[in-house]
Image 1 (cartoon, rainbow, N blue to C red):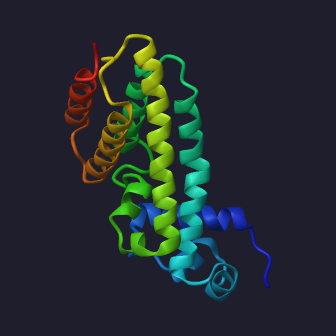
Image 2: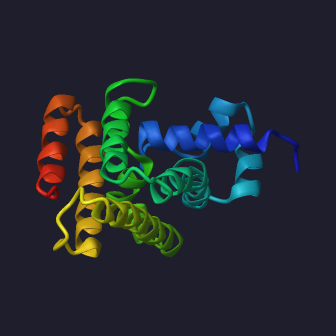
Length: 192
């Protein structure tokens, strides 16, 4: 098999799936962008669906897991959740991925989500994000930042779903200030 920079190839594939969409990216596109023969990519990664699953795993490992770790370890409580939402909104309004949303959110809305390997990864991602948010909410409750009567599991689920919504709306150019007001309203409803 031809030698190539695997990290660069997977980075290109991940970005193409993220920017162009899953349905609009195939092995030939990645081959053209990287200068690697499509046959070589197919031998190494399989078909487009298999390459997408590998790229999605890479995205989770490089983007999501560090975010979960930061959230889970946040000792400041509610400000960490507010900062997380602000980072989602800012990613949607500036930088090279404006209009791309979140690869995980995009994958939830794609036909690829029905594939066992992709669905398993999406379910795992969801559980880990909910757990990280729940951990921060527990800190916030201990600090008296949120109401003590809140169901932490349900609240974590609601905030996770809100994050997907922010990412989805960012993809279609939603006004950042509108997103900020919506997030502030939801978070404000949690406070003591």
